[in-house]
Image (cartoon, rainbow, N blue to C red; front, side, top):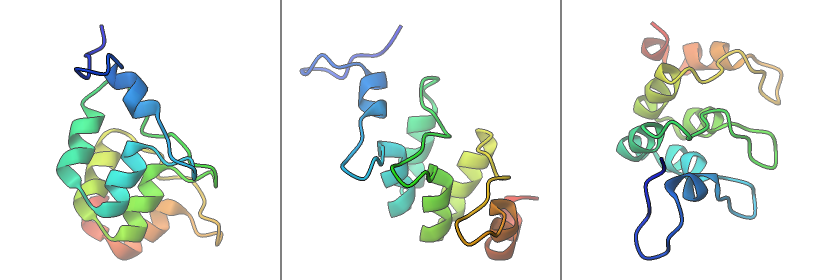
Length: 106
């Protein structure tokens, strides 16, 4: 059963799947802005896809890493975000996380 969002009648799942012109979802945007509590709230919903990709093929964890938000990173990792992906510059995502936020992968 999905929760209703109130007046609009859209399900939470529909809102979570919505994206902007760049293909970014609410999860991408929350990570990009460092809204750790919002990331946690979004990921409480089973239909939230931690691996959803934007138009460039980037998952939310890439935005969290770029924004320098360790709390968001930790939340995504706990939800089993793929840390084995390769970044465009060829460096493995897990290597970049270790370089930037060693405490997130311990």
